[in-house]
Image 1 (cartoon, rainbow, N blue to C red):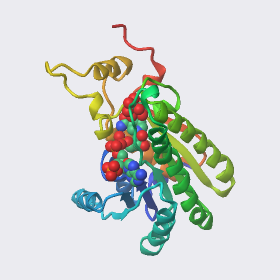
Image 2 (cartoon, rainbow, N blue to C red):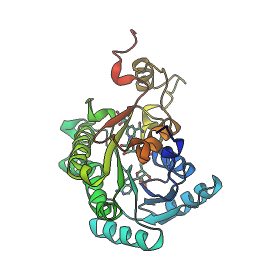
Image 3 (tube, rainbow, N blue to C red):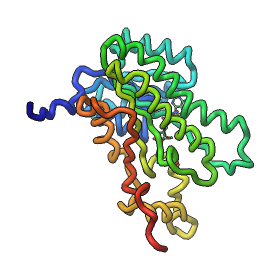
Length: 267
Ligand code: NAP
Ligand code: GCO
């Protein structure tokens, strides 16, 4: 009996963070590495992988970078095999890679809609299907899907993204259902509004130097009265990747400064 803090450690574990070259993915990978995991990440472009390898080295992480598109099932399966021989069987998968297209629905083409669904929903399916056999072999595994507030709420112009992230919430629950007995836990992290390149357009200063109206809106809607940062996601991802969360499964952990609980400050 008694609680051992070692249950939060990840020593000896291999963690793959998709799209882990900057933003939320890089922040989470930094924390997983600090907790002892061997970090593996990917991007679609070799030059971005090379740049990120240097960034990881500067923070003391000897990461392993690979070039592949999470929607390319052949490339994903080949690379997971390559990672197995070069690094080891993947114990922790963080499905972080994702895009958003902010287009009013009547102006959004079916092709635009499909691309967002492909990367944000089909990608995590393809990645999970590729790594689960190794997790079954090892007798344990952690899959962490980057969901969103848009797994719960809609807003104008993000129909494809909300549909994808809503689907990703349910894929999370389904992987939990199908593999919980094999000691594989699949959970989601639902960040609120986080200051990364993906949300930079929503925070651009106005010509008169004032804050973007959406920036002001989020500040008023968030009890914490601030945007989140990738660092705010570091503790949650270590928790969900560690043995400390072995009885947490199918859960979406919202890391949103309280925005989903709050009606918003009176203007
Ligand atoms: P980001 O800054 O746009 O970074 C996304 C990463 O995914 C980039 O490295 C990108 O690579 C990579 N990527 C995109 N498509 C890919 C593909 N097909 N194959 C491989 N990699 C791909 O995004 P972020 O803000 O860090 O968000 C990371 C995740 O959290 C996303 O799933 C996002 O939906 C989710 N999220 C973000 C927020 C937020 O407020 N920022 C809130 C909730 C959820 P390239 O640079 O080469 O394109
Ligand atoms: C948007 C934002 C959001 C955030 C995040 C919120 O345009 O509304 O990009 O979608 O990225 O998903 O949780």
